[in-house]
Length: 559
Image (tube, one colour):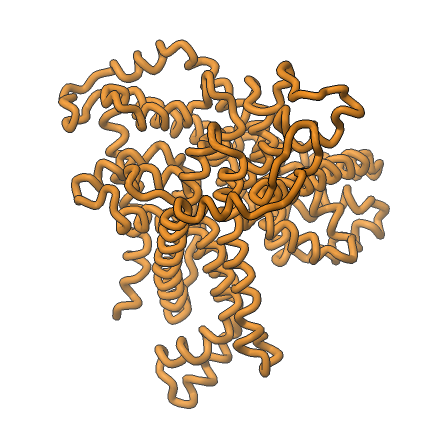
């Protein structure tokens, strides 16, 4: 009986806060926020927003950065999978992509900033021999540039692995080799066959993940705080600043900016839908035309090469965090520190203990709750032999498609009324909104792919449904369950805005501390926080891969 209630409870756990949050942001956007004495509906917040001197530039940055980053990530991911699928060590590439996927956006941004800054690693490596620079160049703007190009690069570095892994997963439902062999027999190049036959069949499975990338790219805050321009910033960063300001009157235009951000993301996703239809129509004509020129081959190879460069920069970003955290004296233009030391770690132990503890507790509890809810939903689905349709999948993606800034202020208002503002329970619940969809999406396919004959055999021997779940299904699915848990931990660790709004400044994690310190603290201290951001999810992934081998070391099929 209880298990039948879990689907409704699960949907309520992450949909109700979003609905309440949107309502709590929409009212202040039109002048209604009784807590600060605003009780009359008004368009004044929108006039304040539109009259702000940097508004047009903020909106332009939001649109250009979002469009460039999402399109570049998609093109690079597709090209990378096309080219890499013929490599013998394709699996090793997937492992590297997983390492980047596990690292939070903010950690990649911090490491990437250390690489491309005017005093960063790249400039140090080529100076002074190639540049003549004995001091960091003052006229070189490679970080926080006014066009947001550094932010576009940082977003692409993080999103390419995600889309590539989503595409690889989708290919499991497509007869790739059969399609390619038939196309090659008719004279098509491998790349052309991919674009004409394989990609159109895989696209429906990666459409929603791509829309999630679009939503994030158009509303990013954490990476924008490190890599993006600050005067003026993108729209989501502007709203965040106003929400965090001591002047409560700015809450109203901040809410208007948040609602506008929601409209921008909705318009971007709708534009993607229209472009998809146009490309499908043009692609159908191209496929039916029978052209075999292979003109796309060199372009795909070049884009795949750029994707590999992006991956290398991502790994170098993580390496930069590690190196700076143990660097001794390191003056410009030296390419390597004079010595390596743990002094920065020793001096930071007292300050990082509390944020690290809060990070681990929030991630562990939110992930555990998400696992219980998701396993219950999937088990209920299996017992009733009823799989959810496309509308349910859209509902699951809602927290990933709605900009965080659009509803988190409303969630904070609700938490204040419930006396959960600034509490651990409030932070965990807010994290659960985002952890739960990722856990469900990562666990649903392995769970549904489990051979039902195992359960039938156990039932024929008199086992109850609960015993079948505990003694048959969970042991067999231990590896995907732990991988889903690792993904949940990675998502929770990387959450910045949910922690800021729900924590109300009283609960800090390594992510919030890293971004707070990013612009003014010692690089060594920032690197320690950034390294911990990446280390916690990577340790979770390592445990997810190692634990089944240890638990089932005498059972080859399960290990």
